[in-house]
Figure 1 (cartoon, rainbow, N blue to C red):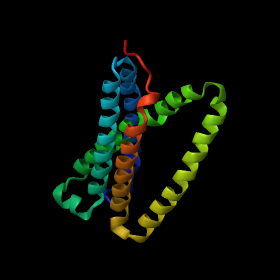
Figure 2 (figure 1 turned 45 degrees about the vertical axis):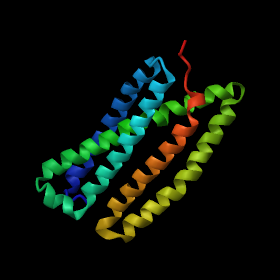
Figure 3 (figure 1 turned 90 degrees about the vertical axis):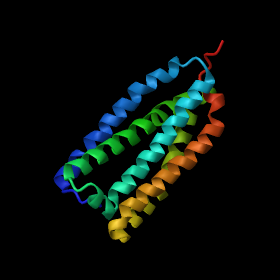
Length: 174
């Protein structure tokens, strides 16, 4: 979909790994924030940037992208930045929020984690199946549509999370 050779696209997975590491490192600052409002702003920014990054990936997959950025190296760089940004923004939520929620279930952590894992698997299965169908059936517009839907999912889940997360945040306010 990006018009880039597979030899370049395969190497772009490194950007996601680096984004994951960056997100986890940046997430350390979350626990140093003294006020709940600052923690909420941190999470809000992550969801907004994640949504925009997924939209950036969708735009890179459009045939128009190769006309706007004719350089393959330039397009690969944009894809790498968008991929790294997406994984950086979402890695904190993926690795840290379950732990925050688990603290509320101190005597039942194993049950809570099993439930969380089951709900995640149950929710991801249909999403992966749907994305597979979209990509295989929509030719050159499959990946852009898939990433557009991913950005919508990120925005909606971020909105829901922002309404429900505050009681789970570590309290450090005096």
